[in-house]
Image (cartoon, rainbow, N blue to C red; front, side, top):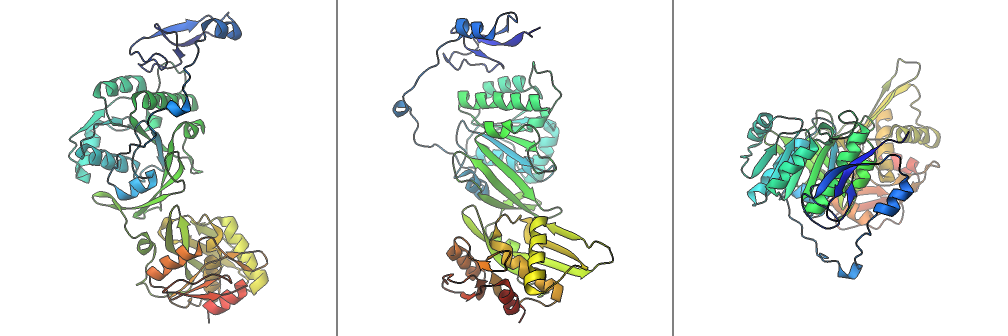
Length: 451
């Protein structure tokens, strides 16, 4: 037997929606939506023919608002990732592990915008207003201009926000609110999907910029259906090494700016602070030179970053030696160890090998292969790499060193950090302040680095 379909219908023009949004998207009238139950015995085709209302058609050339009207948060790294600031009417999702700093960043951004005269509504579903006030006190945030909505019902919270007419609505978090009329557990896929749809409708109809935070699963994805990421305009991920001070804000989707942009923050006693020189934060140039350390440069978004790869190899007492990596794919670690064994003659089959990346950054491009291979060779031989030398190149299974993209920007960043030479693939053009030592094979790079 067919189930009755519940929803809301506009009494003025007949427009229908599943969830209450307050304003009809067809005729634009407020408070004209009434609940209804569609007759379950009626066929869908017949209902569509009888009740469907023609959609509004607009010529693309007649659409106003070609110029973007952003408002910056004045948090430099946050604005960089967003593409210059917050776009009115946009819906953004900020994901990250519990405790990484999502709520801290949202509260700091809310305080900056409120200080600039913007109206901010903060839906605190996970915390009580008292808890938010205590956190604001630790961050040095006064709270003027920020209205707290202590509610877990999304419909009631949006009605309260409507009366405030805010410039920014923050939902902390999407897993802590529920939608009326949805028979599903709190934080379940159905609830999250419907909550995302209602927030999208709210943001677009009221032209209110909306941010929602969300926890991630063990695999690093936002908990809930992937539909949530498809609905929103911006998807940001907050990453941080365990017990580390550095935090990375990464954009994986941005309809208003570049994707794969990265912002670097440092967690301090007064909250998150933008890191003006990320390369200096990832490198410890004053540390004693030790074996297993090699420096490279990667491109994250629109900026080059110099970072250090560290490796350690020790004799193993296990039948199957361990391979542990942090910030580097374990499969990539096995691949480079195999290349070193076959092409260079460095066998670590009886050793436990650990590889990590400084600052908790995750290496996502093969341009760091040569640095990882040299760091592993240095750890296996227990000999330090020549000081002041960096490494750029992709390592093939044959052991050959291949060129990388945007070598000029990478070399310029290494030169700015004080490196005098860089081992790279042939035909890599040098830049002012740093020499290029060309190599064709990883064997030559290892010999040059450990000479």
